Image (cartoon, rainbow, N blue to C red; front, side):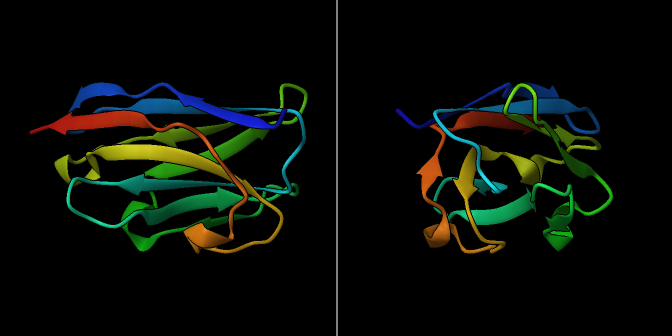
Length: 119
């Protein structure tokens, strides 16, 4: 059974950091992406990486968020620094086979983890 399980969310003050994890089981994904969805808003692209560790970022997170992969553990990590209140959202990891920022092009999704940044 193919699954993605994301975790690591929580409550943090503005300027703080969090690291989210995305553990894959059942297969290895060429592309791992992170998306987020705030209340009343559409799901938006945050960041993605491929097997060669090339990375695409949303402009809103450049310089603050990084993504990495531990291939031995089949796990990806989203390191979030200098967090802002507008980063508050449910964060989802997604697995796919092509580099794309479109959520509808990803095959598998984690269940989501809440990130709340207080001002």
